[in-house]
Amino acid sequence: MIPLSFAQSRLWFLYRFEGPSVTYNQPVVLRLRADVDAGVMALAVRDVVLRHESLRTVIGEDERGVAFQRILSPQDVSIEVPTRAVTEEQVADAIAEAVAHRFALESEIPIRVSLLAVGPQEYVLVILMHHIAGDAASMAPLARDLTTAYVFRAQGQEPEWEPLPVQYADYTLWQQELLGELDNPESIAAAQVAYWRRELAGSPQPLTLPTDRQRPVHRSHRGETVEFAVTPELASGIEALARKHNATVPMVLQAAYALLLSKLGAGDDVVMGSPIAGRTDEDLNDLIGFFVNNWVLRVDLSGDRSFEQVVDQVRDKALAAYDNQDVPFERLVELLNPERSTSYHPLFQVAFVWQSTIATPDTVVEMPGLEWSVVPTENQVAKFDLSLIMAEVGGEFRGYLEYALDVFDRGVAELLVGRFVRVLEQVVAVPGVLVRGVDV
Image (tube, rainbow, N blue to C red; front, side, top):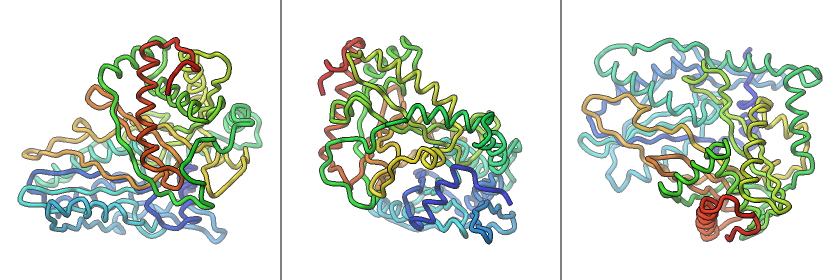
Protein backbone atom coordinates (compact mmCIF):
# COMPACT_ATOMS: atom_id res chain seq x y z
CA MET A 1 0.00 0.00 0.00
CA ILE A 2 1.19 3.52 -0.81
CA PRO A 3 0.98 5.84 2.21
CA LEU A 4 -0.42 9.34 1.99
CA SER A 5 2.07 12.14 1.56
CA PHE A 6 2.40 14.39 4.58
CA ALA A 7 0.36 17.08 2.82
CA GLN A 8 -2.38 14.60 1.93
CA SER A 9 -2.43 13.37 5.52
CA ARG A 10 -3.18 16.93 6.66
CA LEU A 11 -6.23 17.25 4.43
CA TRP A 12 -7.42 13.70 5.10
CA PHE A 13 -7.37 14.42 8.86
CA LEU A 14 -9.45 17.58 8.30
CA TYR A 15 -11.81 15.67 6.01
CA ARG A 16 -12.37 12.99 8.65
CA PHE A 17 -12.72 15.60 11.38
CA GLU A 18 -15.01 18.06 9.58
CA GLY A 19 -16.60 15.90 6.87
CA PRO A 20 -16.84 16.79 3.17
CA SER A 21 -16.66 20.55 2.62
CA VAL A 22 -15.84 23.15 0.00
CA THR A 23 -12.94 24.61 2.03
CA TYR A 24 -10.28 22.94 -0.11
CA ASN A 25 -11.97 23.10 -3.51
CA GLN A 26 -9.83 24.66 -6.24
CA PRO A 27 -11.81 25.92 -9.25
CA VAL A 28 -10.57 27.09 -12.62
CA VAL A 29 -13.25 28.61 -14.85
CA LEU A 30 -12.68 29.48 -18.51
CA ARG A 31 -15.00 31.22 -20.96
CA LEU A 32 -14.64 29.61 -24.39
CA ARG A 33 -15.76 31.24 -27.62
CA ALA A 34 -15.95 28.29 -29.99
CA ASP A 35 -18.08 25.27 -30.79
CA VAL A 36 -17.07 23.00 -27.90
CA ASP A 37 -17.85 19.29 -28.14
CA ALA A 38 -18.65 17.83 -24.70
CA GLY A 39 -17.80 14.32 -25.87
CA VAL A 40 -14.37 15.42 -27.09
CA MET A 41 -13.85 17.32 -23.84
CA ALA A 42 -14.69 14.17 -21.84
CA LEU A 43 -12.06 12.22 -23.78
CA ALA A 44 -9.53 14.97 -23.14
CA VAL A 45 -10.29 15.04 -19.42
CA ARG A 46 -9.90 11.27 -19.30
CA ASP A 47 -6.52 11.57 -21.04
CA VAL A 48 -5.33 13.98 -18.34
CA VAL A 49 -6.69 11.82 -15.51
CA LEU A 50 -4.90 8.78 -16.91
CA ARG A 51 -1.69 10.79 -17.37
CA HIS A 52 -1.64 12.04 -13.75
CA GLU A 53 -2.22 9.32 -11.15
CA SER A 54 -3.05 11.95 -8.50
CA LEU A 55 -6.30 12.70 -10.38
CA ARG A 56 -7.46 9.09 -10.14
CA THR A 57 -6.47 8.49 -6.55
CA VAL A 58 -9.03 7.88 -3.82
CA ILE A 59 -8.23 7.42 -0.14
CA GLY A 60 -8.58 4.08 1.59
CA GLU A 61 -8.02 2.96 5.17
CA ASP A 62 -6.71 -0.35 6.42
CA GLU A 63 -8.15 -2.31 9.34
CA ARG A 64 -6.13 -0.17 11.76
CA GLY A 65 -7.52 3.05 10.32
CA VAL A 66 -4.25 3.99 8.58
CA ALA A 67 -4.98 5.87 5.35
CA PHE A 68 -3.34 5.04 2.03
CA GLN A 69 -3.50 6.05 -1.63
CA ARG A 70 -5.65 3.84 -3.83
CA ILE A 71 -4.82 4.58 -7.46
CA LEU A 72 -7.65 3.52 -9.75
CA SER A 73 -6.80 1.54 -12.86
CA PRO A 74 -7.79 3.10 -16.21
CA GLN A 75 -10.72 0.70 -16.66
CA ASP A 76 -12.15 1.85 -13.32
CA VAL A 77 -12.15 5.53 -14.30
CA SER A 78 -15.38 6.89 -15.74
CA ILE A 79 -15.39 10.48 -16.98
CA GLU A 80 -18.41 12.55 -17.89
CA VAL A 81 -18.55 16.23 -18.79
CA PRO A 82 -22.19 17.22 -18.27
CA THR A 83 -23.44 20.16 -20.32
CA ARG A 84 -26.08 22.55 -19.05
CA ALA A 85 -27.77 25.31 -21.04
CA VAL A 86 -27.88 28.63 -19.18
CA THR A 87 -28.60 32.25 -19.96
CA GLU A 88 -25.96 34.92 -19.45
CA GLU A 89 -27.77 36.01 -16.29
CA GLN A 90 -27.61 32.47 -14.90
CA VAL A 91 -23.88 31.93 -15.46
CA ALA A 92 -22.67 33.21 -12.07
CA ASP A 93 -25.16 31.10 -10.11
CA ALA A 94 -24.40 28.03 -12.23
CA ILE A 95 -20.65 28.43 -11.61
CA ALA A 96 -21.25 28.87 -7.87
CA GLU A 97 -23.32 25.69 -7.82
CA ALA A 98 -20.66 23.72 -9.70
CA VAL A 99 -17.75 24.80 -7.48
CA ALA A 100 -19.74 24.10 -4.30
CA HIS A 101 -19.54 20.34 -4.92
CA ARG A 102 -18.36 18.37 -1.88
CA PHE A 103 -15.98 15.60 -2.89
CA ALA A 104 -16.25 12.16 -1.30
CA LEU A 105 -12.51 11.50 -1.17
CA GLU A 106 -12.83 7.83 -0.31
CA SER A 107 -14.93 6.97 -3.36
CA GLU A 108 -14.74 9.81 -5.92
CA ILE A 109 -11.82 10.97 -8.05
CA PRO A 110 -10.78 14.49 -6.99
CA ILE A 111 -11.60 16.30 -10.23
CA ARG A 112 -14.85 17.28 -11.96
CA VAL A 113 -15.36 19.12 -15.24
CA SER A 114 -18.62 20.56 -16.56
CA LEU A 115 -19.73 22.81 -19.43
CA LEU A 116 -22.20 25.65 -19.39
CA ALA A 117 -23.68 26.36 -22.82
CA VAL A 118 -24.42 30.08 -22.86
CA GLY A 119 -25.18 30.39 -26.57
CA PRO A 120 -23.88 29.48 -30.03
CA GLN A 121 -20.07 29.45 -29.87
CA GLU A 122 -20.20 30.53 -26.21
CA TYR A 123 -19.36 28.13 -23.36
CA VAL A 124 -18.05 28.26 -19.83
CA LEU A 125 -15.77 25.41 -18.78
CA VAL A 126 -15.74 24.72 -15.01
CA ILE A 127 -12.81 22.66 -13.73
CA LEU A 128 -12.97 21.74 -10.05
CA MET A 129 -10.11 19.96 -8.32
CA HIS A 130 -9.75 19.07 -4.65
CA HIS A 131 -6.59 20.36 -2.99
CA ILE A 132 -5.64 16.81 -1.94
CA ALA A 133 -4.84 16.12 -5.62
CA GLY A 134 -3.15 19.36 -6.60
CA ASP A 135 -1.97 22.81 -5.56
CA ALA A 136 -1.76 26.24 -7.20
CA ALA A 137 1.37 25.24 -9.12
CA SER A 138 -0.59 22.29 -10.56
CA MET A 139 -2.93 24.60 -12.45
CA ALA A 140 -0.41 25.32 -15.23
CA PRO A 141 0.23 21.64 -16.16
CA LEU A 142 -3.49 20.92 -15.75
CA ALA A 143 -4.50 23.68 -18.18
CA ARG A 144 -1.70 22.85 -20.61
CA ASP A 145 -2.35 19.09 -20.67
CA LEU A 146 -6.12 19.51 -20.97
CA THR A 147 -5.90 21.85 -23.94
CA THR A 148 -3.24 19.67 -25.60
CA ALA A 149 -5.46 16.61 -25.22
CA TYR A 150 -8.50 18.49 -26.57
CA VAL A 151 -6.62 19.63 -29.68
CA PHE A 152 -5.61 16.05 -30.48
CA ARG A 153 -9.01 14.53 -29.65
CA ALA A 154 -10.78 17.10 -31.80
CA GLN A 155 -8.71 15.71 -34.70
CA GLY A 156 -9.61 12.14 -33.81
CA GLN A 157 -6.16 11.37 -32.40
CA GLU A 158 -4.72 10.40 -29.05
CA PRO A 159 -2.56 13.11 -27.47
CA GLU A 160 1.17 12.97 -28.10
CA TRP A 161 3.20 14.06 -25.12
CA GLU A 162 6.37 13.10 -23.33
CA PRO A 163 5.80 10.53 -20.56
CA LEU A 164 6.02 11.98 -17.06
CA PRO A 165 9.32 11.05 -15.39
CA VAL A 166 7.62 10.34 -12.04
CA GLN A 167 4.18 10.12 -10.50
CA TYR A 168 2.91 11.53 -7.21
CA ALA A 169 3.21 8.16 -5.46
CA ASP A 170 6.94 8.13 -6.29
CA TYR A 171 7.28 11.52 -4.61
CA THR A 172 5.43 10.26 -1.52
CA LEU A 173 7.83 7.35 -1.04
CA TRP A 174 10.85 9.56 -1.78
CA GLN A 175 9.64 12.14 0.77
CA GLN A 176 9.47 9.59 3.55
CA GLU A 177 12.87 8.13 2.69
CA LEU A 178 14.50 11.57 2.45
CA LEU A 179 13.31 12.94 5.78
CA GLY A 180 14.15 9.88 7.84
CA GLU A 181 13.02 9.28 11.41
CA LEU A 182 12.70 12.04 13.97
CA ASP A 183 14.36 9.89 16.64
CA ASN A 184 17.50 9.70 14.48
CA PRO A 185 19.56 12.81 15.36
CA GLU A 186 21.39 12.49 12.03
CA SER A 187 18.20 12.68 9.96
CA ILE A 188 17.07 15.67 7.95
CA ALA A 189 13.77 15.62 9.83
CA ALA A 190 15.46 15.95 13.23
CA ALA A 191 17.67 18.84 12.08
CA GLN A 192 14.76 20.76 10.56
CA VAL A 193 12.51 20.27 13.58
CA ALA A 194 15.31 21.59 15.81
CA TYR A 195 15.50 24.74 13.66
CA TRP A 196 11.76 25.39 13.94
CA ARG A 197 11.79 24.75 17.70
CA ARG A 198 14.35 27.52 18.10
CA GLU A 199 12.66 29.89 15.66
CA LEU A 200 9.12 29.61 17.04
CA ALA A 201 9.80 29.24 20.76
CA GLY A 202 7.48 31.58 22.65
CA SER A 203 5.74 32.98 19.57
CA PRO A 204 2.43 34.75 20.35
CA GLN A 205 -0.78 32.72 20.07
CA PRO A 206 -3.11 33.91 18.72
CA LEU A 207 -1.92 37.10 17.00
CA THR A 208 -3.64 40.10 18.56
CA LEU A 209 -5.63 42.16 16.08
CA PRO A 210 -8.67 44.39 16.56
CA THR A 211 -11.61 42.28 15.37
CA ASP A 212 -15.22 43.22 14.80
CA ARG A 213 -16.49 40.42 17.02
CA GLN A 214 -15.27 37.73 19.37
CA ARG A 215 -14.05 34.49 17.87
CA PRO A 216 -16.64 31.71 17.77
CA VAL A 217 -15.85 28.45 19.55
CA HIS A 218 -15.55 26.72 16.16
CA ARG A 219 -14.35 28.40 12.97
CA SER A 220 -16.91 28.33 10.17
CA HIS A 221 -14.34 29.00 7.37
CA ARG A 222 -16.82 31.42 5.80
CA GLY A 223 -15.01 34.21 4.03
CA GLU A 224 -15.08 37.00 1.49
CA THR A 225 -12.46 38.95 -0.44
CA VAL A 226 -11.53 42.54 -1.20
CA GLU A 227 -9.54 43.14 -4.39
CA PHE A 228 -6.89 45.81 -4.93
CA ALA A 229 -4.05 46.69 -7.29
CA VAL A 230 -0.59 48.21 -6.98
CA THR A 231 0.22 50.58 -9.84
CA PRO A 232 3.04 49.77 -12.27
CA GLU A 233 5.04 52.72 -10.89
CA LEU A 234 4.78 51.49 -7.32
CA ALA A 235 5.48 47.93 -8.45
CA SER A 236 8.70 49.13 -10.12
CA GLY A 237 9.72 50.80 -6.87
CA ILE A 238 9.11 47.58 -4.92
CA GLU A 239 11.18 45.61 -7.43
CA ALA A 240 14.04 48.12 -7.16
CA LEU A 241 13.96 47.92 -3.36
CA ALA A 242 14.05 44.12 -3.56
CA ARG A 243 17.07 44.19 -5.90
CA LYS A 244 18.92 46.59 -3.62
CA HIS A 245 18.62 44.11 -0.75
CA ASN A 246 19.17 40.91 -2.76
CA ALA A 247 15.61 40.01 -1.86
CA THR A 248 12.53 39.00 -3.80
CA VAL A 249 9.38 41.03 -4.31
CA PRO A 250 7.39 38.75 -1.97
CA MET A 251 9.97 39.37 0.78
CA VAL A 252 9.46 43.13 0.53
CA LEU A 253 5.68 42.68 0.51
CA GLN A 254 5.84 40.41 3.57
CA ALA A 255 7.95 42.97 5.41
CA ALA A 256 5.37 45.68 4.65
CA TYR A 257 2.52 43.36 5.68
CA ALA A 258 4.23 42.57 9.00
CA LEU A 259 4.78 46.29 9.60
CA LEU A 260 1.11 47.01 8.95
CA LEU A 261 -0.08 44.23 11.27
CA SER A 262 2.25 45.49 13.99
CA LYS A 263 0.84 49.00 13.67
CA LEU A 264 -2.71 47.66 13.86
CA GLY A 265 -2.16 46.01 17.23
CA ALA A 266 -0.16 42.84 16.65
CA GLY A 267 2.80 44.20 18.61
CA ASP A 268 6.50 43.79 17.90
CA ASP A 269 6.43 40.00 17.45
CA VAL A 270 4.46 39.30 14.26
CA VAL A 271 3.92 35.74 13.04
CA MET A 272 2.46 34.90 9.63
CA GLY A 273 2.26 31.80 7.49
CA SER A 274 3.13 31.37 3.84
CA PRO A 275 2.96 28.45 1.44
CA ILE A 276 6.14 27.06 -0.07
CA ALA A 277 5.94 25.19 -3.36
CA GLY A 278 7.67 22.02 -2.20
CA ARG A 279 8.74 21.10 -5.75
CA THR A 280 12.39 20.61 -4.89
CA ASP A 281 13.20 18.49 -7.95
CA GLU A 282 12.70 19.54 -11.58
CA ASP A 283 11.04 16.18 -12.32
CA LEU A 284 8.07 17.41 -10.26
CA ASN A 285 7.47 20.62 -12.23
CA ASP A 286 5.04 19.17 -14.77
CA LEU A 287 3.21 17.01 -12.25
CA ILE A 288 -0.28 17.61 -10.89
CA GLY A 289 -0.06 16.94 -7.17
CA PHE A 290 -0.17 18.38 -3.67
CA PHE A 291 3.39 19.45 -2.86
CA VAL A 292 2.85 22.76 -1.09
CA ASN A 293 3.80 23.07 2.57
CA ASN A 294 3.30 25.90 5.06
CA TRP A 295 6.18 27.75 6.66
CA VAL A 296 6.08 30.33 9.41
CA LEU A 297 7.68 33.77 9.24
CA ARG A 298 8.33 35.46 12.58
CA VAL A 299 9.26 39.12 12.29
CA ASP A 300 10.83 41.10 15.14
CA LEU A 301 9.87 44.78 14.89
CA SER A 302 11.15 45.83 18.30
CA GLY A 303 13.70 48.57 18.81
CA ASP A 304 14.36 51.46 16.46
CA ARG A 305 14.46 49.45 13.24
CA SER A 306 14.26 50.85 9.75
CA PHE A 307 12.12 49.26 7.09
CA GLU A 308 15.25 48.22 5.21
CA GLN A 309 16.39 46.30 8.28
CA VAL A 310 13.02 44.55 8.38
CA VAL A 311 13.44 43.56 4.72
CA ASP A 312 16.89 42.13 5.48
CA GLN A 313 15.47 40.17 8.40
CA VAL A 314 12.61 38.78 6.32
CA ARG A 315 15.05 37.81 3.56
CA ASP A 316 17.34 35.93 5.95
CA LYS A 317 14.47 34.13 7.66
CA ALA A 318 12.85 33.21 4.36
CA LEU A 319 16.10 31.72 3.07
CA ALA A 320 16.49 29.74 6.30
CA ALA A 321 12.92 28.53 5.95
CA TYR A 322 13.64 27.28 2.42
CA ASP A 323 16.52 25.24 3.85
CA ASN A 324 14.14 23.74 6.44
CA GLN A 325 11.01 23.38 4.34
CA ASP A 326 10.56 19.61 4.23
CA VAL A 327 9.07 18.91 7.64
CA PRO A 328 5.28 18.93 7.20
CA PHE A 329 3.54 21.79 8.94
CA GLU A 330 1.14 19.43 10.72
CA ARG A 331 4.05 17.46 12.12
CA LEU A 332 5.51 20.71 13.43
CA VAL A 333 2.24 21.58 15.13
CA GLU A 334 2.17 18.16 16.73
CA LEU A 335 5.79 18.39 17.95
CA LEU A 336 5.80 22.05 19.05
CA ASN A 337 2.41 21.56 20.68
CA PRO A 338 1.20 25.17 20.84
CA GLU A 339 -2.02 25.96 22.63
CA ARG A 340 -4.72 24.45 20.43
CA SER A 341 -8.17 25.83 19.80
CA THR A 342 -11.02 25.13 17.40
CA SER A 343 -11.50 28.90 17.05
CA TYR A 344 -8.18 29.72 15.39
CA HIS A 345 -5.45 28.15 13.29
CA PRO A 346 -2.35 26.86 15.15
CA LEU A 347 0.99 28.75 15.00
CA PHE A 348 -0.31 31.47 12.67
CA GLN A 349 -3.64 33.11 11.92
CA VAL A 350 -2.67 35.46 9.08
CA ALA A 351 -1.04 34.43 5.82
CA PHE A 352 0.74 35.94 2.85
CA VAL A 353 0.61 34.20 -0.54
CA TRP A 354 2.53 35.13 -3.69
CA GLN A 355 0.95 33.44 -6.70
CA SER A 356 3.83 32.89 -9.08
CA THR A 357 1.95 30.34 -11.20
CA ILE A 358 -1.53 31.10 -12.48
CA ALA A 359 -3.49 30.04 -15.55
CA THR A 360 -2.52 32.52 -18.25
CA PRO A 361 -2.52 32.30 -22.05
CA ASP A 362 1.07 31.04 -22.15
CA THR A 363 0.15 28.03 -20.00
CA VAL A 364 -2.62 26.93 -22.35
CA VAL A 365 -2.12 25.45 -25.80
CA GLU A 366 -3.82 27.51 -28.48
CA MET A 367 -6.80 25.84 -30.09
CA PRO A 368 -7.57 26.81 -33.70
CA GLY A 369 -10.59 29.08 -33.84
CA LEU A 370 -10.86 29.34 -30.06
CA GLU A 371 -10.84 32.47 -27.93
CA TRP A 372 -10.75 31.98 -24.20
CA SER A 373 -10.43 33.97 -20.99
CA VAL A 374 -10.25 33.19 -17.28
CA VAL A 375 -13.48 33.83 -15.36
CA PRO A 376 -12.82 35.01 -11.78
CA THR A 377 -14.68 32.94 -9.19
CA GLU A 378 -16.04 34.47 -6.03
CA ASN A 379 -14.25 33.08 -3.00
CA GLN A 380 -16.50 32.37 -0.02
CA VAL A 381 -13.97 30.46 2.07
CA ALA A 382 -11.35 31.74 4.52
CA LYS A 383 -8.76 29.27 5.76
CA PHE A 384 -7.25 31.88 8.13
CA ASP A 385 -8.31 35.12 9.79
CA LEU A 386 -6.58 37.14 7.06
CA SER A 387 -4.82 36.02 3.89
CA LEU A 388 -3.12 38.54 1.63
CA ILE A 389 -2.81 36.97 -1.83
CA MET A 390 -0.85 38.74 -4.59
CA ALA A 391 0.51 38.12 -8.08
CA GLU A 392 2.15 40.03 -10.91
CA VAL A 393 -0.24 40.51 -13.82
CA GLY A 394 0.57 42.66 -16.82
CA GLY A 395 3.27 44.75 -15.14
CA GLU A 396 1.30 45.57 -12.01
CA PHE A 397 0.74 43.74 -8.74
CA ARG A 398 -2.81 42.63 -8.18
CA GLY A 399 -4.10 41.11 -5.02
CA TYR A 400 -6.97 40.43 -2.75
CA LEU A 401 -7.45 40.16 0.98
CA GLU A 402 -9.33 37.06 2.06
CA TYR A 403 -10.93 37.64 5.45
CA ALA A 404 -12.88 35.44 7.87
CA LEU A 405 -16.44 36.55 8.39
CA ASP A 406 -16.28 35.02 11.87
CA VAL A 407 -14.21 37.99 13.08
CA PHE A 408 -14.09 40.72 10.41
CA ASP A 409 -16.56 42.87 8.49
CA ARG A 410 -16.00 44.06 4.93
CA GLY A 411 -15.39 47.65 5.98
CA VAL A 412 -12.36 46.65 8.04
CA ALA A 413 -10.99 44.54 5.19
CA GLU A 414 -11.30 47.48 2.81
CA LEU A 415 -9.46 49.70 5.28
CA LEU A 416 -6.69 47.11 5.59
CA VAL A 417 -5.93 46.92 1.86
CA GLY A 418 -5.97 50.70 1.60
CA ARG A 419 -3.53 50.99 4.48
CA PHE A 420 -1.32 48.25 3.04
CA VAL A 421 -0.92 50.19 -0.22
CA ARG A 422 -0.24 53.34 1.82
CA VAL A 423 2.55 51.54 3.70
CA LEU A 424 4.07 50.41 0.39
CA GLU A 425 4.03 53.96 -0.96
CA GLN A 426 5.86 55.26 2.12
CA VAL A 427 8.57 52.59 2.29
CA VAL A 428 9.28 52.81 -1.44
CA ALA A 429 9.56 56.59 -1.23
CA VAL A 430 11.89 56.43 1.81
CA PRO A 431 13.21 52.85 2.24
CA GLY A 432 15.26 53.87 5.30
CA VAL A 433 12.19 55.13 7.17
CA LEU A 434 11.98 53.94 10.75
CA VAL A 435 9.15 51.53 11.51
CA ARG A 436 7.80 53.92 14.13
CA GLY A 437 7.70 56.66 11.50
CA VAL A 438 5.39 54.84 9.08
CA ASP A 439 1.86 56.24 9.13
CA VAL A 440 -1.09 53.90 8.67
